[in-house]
Image (tube, rainbow, N blue to C red):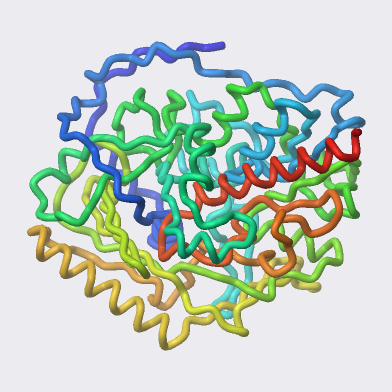
Amino acid sequence: MRHSTKRPPLDPDSFRLGRGLSRRGFLCLSALAGSGMALSSPAATIAPPGLLPEPGRAIHWPPPVVPKDLWYEPDVVVIGSGAGGGVVARVLARKWRVLVLEMGPWFDPATYTHKPHIFSNLLAVETTSGVFRPMMVSGVGGTTLHYQGEAHRFAPADLARIPGLGSNPDAVYGEVEKLVGVRTHPPNPASRGLDLPDFVACPLAIDDSCHYCLHCMYGCDIDAKRSTDVLLREAGVPVATGCAVHSTDGTVVNFFREGKRLKVKARAVVLSGGTLGTPAILQRSGVACGDWLQGTLGVQAETTRESHTGVDIDRSLFEKDYSVALHHHDGHVWLLATGERETGPDHRAKVSRTTGYLQIDAPLTDRDRATCKRLREICRGIAAQAGLKLGKIYSADDPFPTDSIMTGTTSRIVDSSFRIAPGVFVADGSVLTNQGGGRSASLTIQAVAMRVAAHVNAELERSHG
């Protein structure tokens, strides 16, 4: 167990992460931004990161090794270790023998911070505009390694549209918020003095040891950001890395590791490969899915106001059908507006028989283009109200694919227990039937994972008894 060490004062210029990050990549990575529940945050002064007191708490590294016998006698196999899989594994490992299969590696928090190039987007996707790589982080923790810690509750009406969750936010989110440690942080210095009365503090899965270095999107070397790799490491849950899952046959999982084709049988299987990864596995397993696809539309407006310290997303505005967040990135304040795409019969995802790629058909509609235009005008209006001077504005209706935040690909085949067959469950964004009006879906996926863990536990207890 290693303790964090003293860090020198940080150079504000080192926060400018735009170098080496493509415009399309920035839009894809930024599309997670949304808005949250109305929480207040006390006004406080943020000290420069190098002057903050050290947390003095242990970093749980190295991660636990997978016991050899676990390969032969697991109670549960969890495919993927992101927002859904990480929470399912953490909860079920309290009682059962859980084997987590993850395609990517563990990332040492002392070495991977601020190095976005080490994340491998290994899932190539074909669209009507060509081939692009959506935001798929290959590594223990999944996309939670590469998000800003946003932990937004969906509104009751949006929760009610997701079978199996219920519409009471406290009942849906209370337990998982305690697990991941959701709280609010003081506003960034660059946000103070802005005339934004309807913006509220953003709930974040970032604890009080945060150094406010503005690198939330690229990892955390002191484990202040509660990504799911942190949850797994601190609970000692072993993860088998380098496992590329091909298909499942009931509760038998077929996968490749170190060039060998292997299989493992469990009493229950939880698929948490993500909105695009899980349907690819299921379709290769002969399960029809992916005939419904929900997505977001994002507009990112850069301002000339500089920002060099704080959390990446500190204040946000949520309306019924869109959200706007103050995003601090690349040394400036950005306005991030997000809405939902129109869903129609032409939106689907399927695995190509010729290339093996996951093919996505999700053309923008006239309504989508009108939504983008509205979001751009909303950003201009907020900037004028706050006295912010706008620079470039990037939009999802630009002439290249940028819409990578998608849900719903298995929502039509799971039951109210998020089960698709006896002993086979899904716990990721693919089960969500909506995007919560543009809110980040991470906490809702984790809430689904808590429900799935309870259903798996009940099924195992029935079969065990």
